[in-house]
Length: 184
Image (cartoon, rainbow, N blue to C red; front, side, top):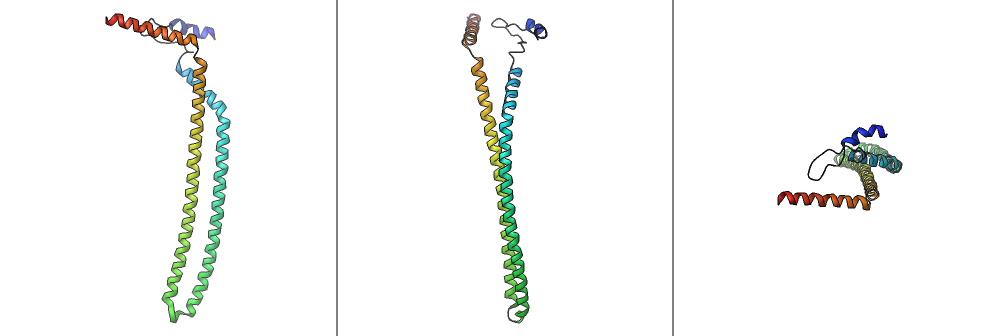
């Protein structure tokens, strides 16, 4: 590993204050640090994320099953309504002379109310599914953000030590001193 990084290290010394240069120290650059942090997040967060998604999937499937049961109940009501409709139609034939128009209105009202009931149940099922999906997505986003933030804070806390902090302050003071001499 040392032989591979030697050419980069010979090019990558810290330039003196006031000049520009490339940092070719591959271990001190952000892409490596970010890839390590992302790798750790993916490695350790994969299980938690898959558990969350599995739990959410089970809840959504349960909601769908409940909606299907409601739909089955609505279909039963529809069948009862159709049976009632047949009964009303038979009665309509008997009472055609007396009140044909009244029976037709009742029939249409029955069909419309059953249609509205089915439509409301279908809308409720779709809204429930959409709500559960949005809630699952929001929970997963929140969990991933928290884990990424904790990982980043842990990395920052583990990388900062007194020596590095003092070196950074000394370098910045030297740069400000050079800038002051140049402007004076």
